[in-house]
Image 1 (cartoon, helix red, strand yellow):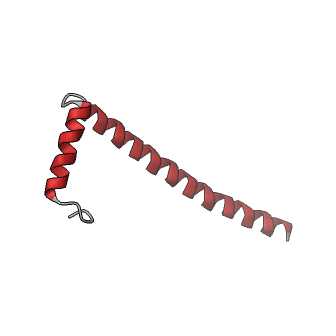
Image 2 (cartoon, rainbow, N blue to C red):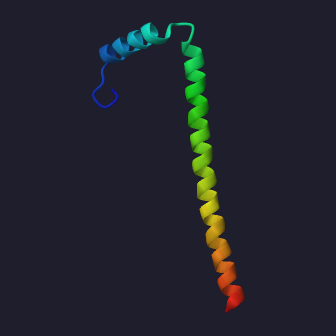
Image 3 (cartoon, one colour):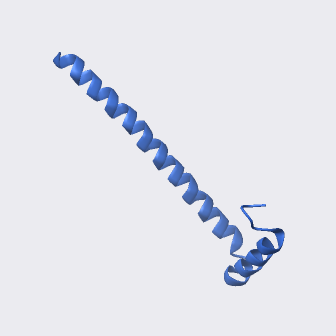
Length: 66
């Protein structure tokens, strides 16, 4: 299934998570995890966009100086 993790292992993990966090906290944990992933993707996209801008700025400066 997921790289060697079967259905039984997933059920055991889910039970352990429910014991640790409780059933009421699971939606909150899921939301915070989702927002963290979105923030990470956003920051990676911004870094990638900044790289393109800086390369363009460097090319503009080299053209202006030549």
